[in-house]
Length: 344
Image 1 (cartoon, one colour):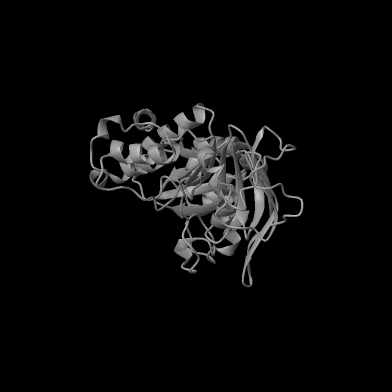
Image 2 (cartoon, rainbow, N blue to C red; image 1 turned 60 degrees about the vertical axis):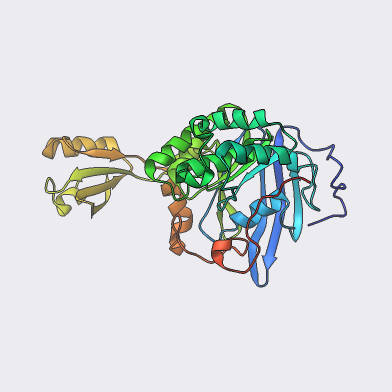
């Protein structure tokens, strides 16, 4: 990272924009012959729920670790809450919270004991543990051993561990990974609560419906660069992706559907005939005249359509295996795993 114009880590940047929680400018990081992060620039505003999306190997983990101060960039500048996170700035640790994919727990303690222990590391009292258990909806499980919590409850406890010291900025790394649909939706409510409290959240996920529902803005990374950055709604609107009409099988033939005015493409999927169109109203009228609309479903474009348009040409999709991000332990590159750190 450029250091000749960087303030010492114990000095706040007096020129920093007070409305920006994270500022990344032209950051690069290379591992051998692989450019993991290639000139990324973006800002995260205070109070914003900001999503970082991209296929495996896009550079998300490397970028997050640079911002958290766990890894040094080759060049570029980073400001977190007005300070440089590298060299490691211990003054920042009480101000940020980190939830990783592989969170560590004191499994022989109860949920409250675990959280009180974490709170003590930040010199917070045990009452902070009770408040945070309530925030994530674990008050009823406060006396349950961590090893006996369900997967969804452990994920809530991991988020609670990142919140217990009341940080200004929170990093959440795929908090709903490996959860069943109901547990995912339950955790959404926890995340919405955090958002309503005005907390600044930087969030990575492969669940694009989740990002669309929760994030104020998202950045989609491809090949170590920002391919798109805006609110989910604006990205979807700008993409002009087609709407899809799902007609129950047997109601229309392929050739008959393809001949309808306004239909761009027809396919068969999951027992339905799928009509893609940029004029859904016109096509609905035509289908209604031929066979009625009973059982016909309409699906408008989503953030997933935008994502696949940006990444799908390389065969990537959410969660697909791609060239590994060397900072991602799942990539088995031998780089250190993404870990959290408590203040001394």
